[in-house]
Length: 228
Image 1: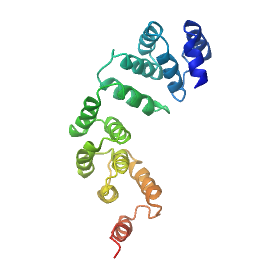
Image 2 (image 1 turned 45 degrees about the vertical axis):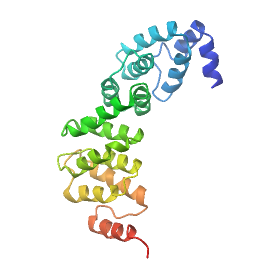
Image 3 (image 1 turned 30 degrees about the vertical axis):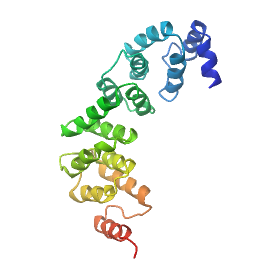
Image 4 (image 1 turned 90 degrees about the vertical axis):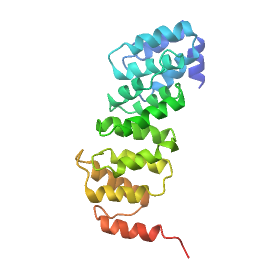
């Protein structure tokens, strides 16, 4: 925190220090992107906004999203699509958190409705659906539960893993049996979705039943039965 405050307080000199340390922002990783955001956010608008515009119009996704968050904080970006698009364009670590920071600058109801509408308009791109589920879970959007449940019951829906994890985050009690139903009918794509879902079930439950859906269901019926 002291580093952030010191660099921000230095104004133009602090900006130059930030540029040198990151080689003109070309080596800003998504892991330390939050630090860059906080430094620039604490600087005067006359410094922050031109830098944000510069970053937003660069080619690298990790630079664009930092610029986008700063512009959203200043009210220059108001639509959530830009953050979902940038998040889906990169597999780099930290992108999810930076996109969440962008969403947090926008109207909450607008963001939640936007993400839920993506699921309502399925089937669409697997990655967009997967990201939407992840963001809804992270944002604790309980209102999304009915639509996520519908998605998991839809045989054409493939983003099962993140839908399951979102329901778990949102404390939906029937998330596990829904996941087992998906395993039973088969998940057409991507190829590793079923395997990753099984691993997640094992982590969540502490059980090791692999792809044996029958054993999973027997265990669940016993585990979820109220104690007498």
